[in-house]
Image (cartoon, rainbow, N blue to C red; front, side):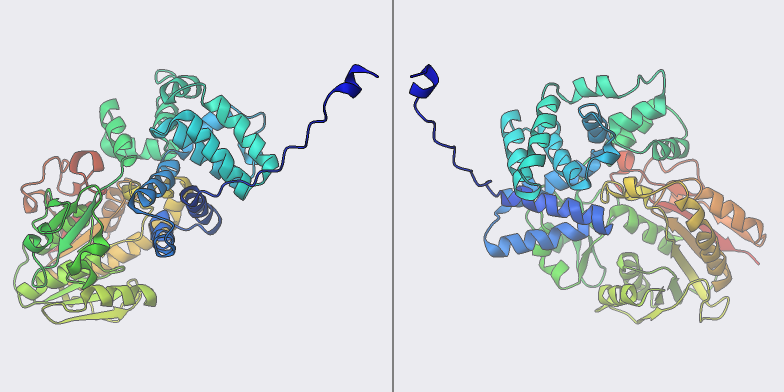
Length: 472
């Protein structure tokens, strides 16, 4: 009898079912929705979390981990893609998107959290077995084991070009922004390495939730009684919710007497409301009112002076959101669905006009990190005609002596100063109003007369505002 025949027979190892991890499965589902449907994480994630809580799958810590996994993976996608590319033997475009999403979640756990490396790898491989199958799970395991050989700083030394050789590409890889966005933001800041690095780092930080106490309906004192609530930095109506604060748990928010609104957005509305006008101050217009945050604050401020706000929004469903935000306003107002470039009102009808125009949204990358990967330089050409048309209509809608506010949630010069300069060439009977004295407690607003807010300087979205007075 041969030696081999005398060996005891080894029973086959039973096939082990993959362990389902509700937190990581939910994070994967959110990333797939962002990729497949062009959804935004801040709209996709809350209903997924709510459903998981209702099923009893999640507690508060689970929800916090799922949120961190989704947003962290999206914010650092550019950096993580560069690292994964160094660990695979094919171009990333040849790797299936669901596999890349699982790898992104794994790399973020390895390099961007305190989860132990062995736990990060094993949990991600289990996720891959559930959502991708055993074959592709082996690929995920092999890649993540390579990634685990270095920490984030070690990888950045390998995959980012030296700053001295290519500053923009270095910053793009290290801070996970497309190169063209780095270049545009740097131009808007006006140069200097420290400023752009501070801004890009701020874009990758989790923003606090900021509430607005709508005048005549709520007060900051009421909101500050909430757990984890602290005063805003700049707006007298702002309250910030620190770590763990949930706006849906705030009674005034549920009742519409307060809302979720970035402090930069509040400051734009306040600056327009405080701008001096000559003569009457009775009729205000928000010409791009959706989804309604600025309109609700402007409506309340108008009511305090006995003025009326007309809130106009082109998309009917967004006009519905505006109506909901204004419902209960202490003074008269009207909401209409109308195209701001072909308005139904007569020229010269208003004393104050705000147009917060559609834009690339590069000022809100903290809140919508996926937008940085979705936008392209050519998008600027698509927005440019609309932005100019809306500003022209606004200037024609305000009376002589009245004021127009042109606002964007983008600091890109092509969407801010270039638009204002181009349009004002066609309207010689106008003048720029210095907006900086209208926000006296806010530092570092720029050279004026317009103002530019920044995440790293003000803790706000990068809102831009130019105020223009009709002089004839």
